[in-house]
Image 1 (cartoon, rainbow, N blue to C red):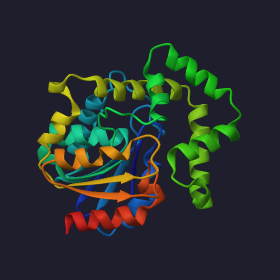
Image 2 (tube, rainbow, N blue to C red; image 1 turned 180 degrees about the horizontal axis):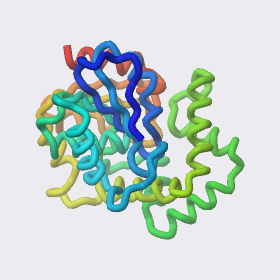
Image 3 (tube, one colour; image 1 turned 90 degrees about the vertical axis):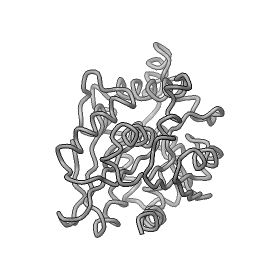
Length: 274
């Protein structure tokens, strides 16, 4: 499923919003509405997430990037500003390296770039990537009462869950219910975690850092000081690795700054393209 961000004029430059592992196109609603006077946004649910069923052979980061390139061919008539969060940030980097003429800029929020020191919480996702063990971990997790899983998920993703607006909490709760009900949800999560782990373990010549060095468009990097999934200490290395990158560090933000602090992400993007 692909969502158009409402309110944008058809003649505005296009933008593509790419969510992370376990997320959906709804992760971009707040930011998309703030930017609908500047870009014409398109937010797809990646295969296996949101309302999109899985597609055979589309599980890895580069396969997802290739699929998004085809979507851009069909929907856009000029280069697009690409936003990516977490796994979606890694996919956005691969897309910019694969289709450089289709990308006008990158805004990467806690991108899942290979890190020698994964965070403690990220070890849980590493377990998901291991055959058999991952299925056991998910099965055990699903037996935990829903309310407890909801609170754990909120604390894992957001810097300060207590400060979330009620409507944002409701959106996250609805998404968790939907993932529980989807027959493919568990396998999509396992496949996504495995694709991230494989990108971390790739040999140097096939590393995502090679793709990073190929990106010639302006890049806005955004990291949260309370991110429990991506260690924000990698931000300096990331800024140096991209040929043209700016860095925004948000000490109070978690893993999804576009949801938690959309106005700060909006401001950073406007400065990037000014």
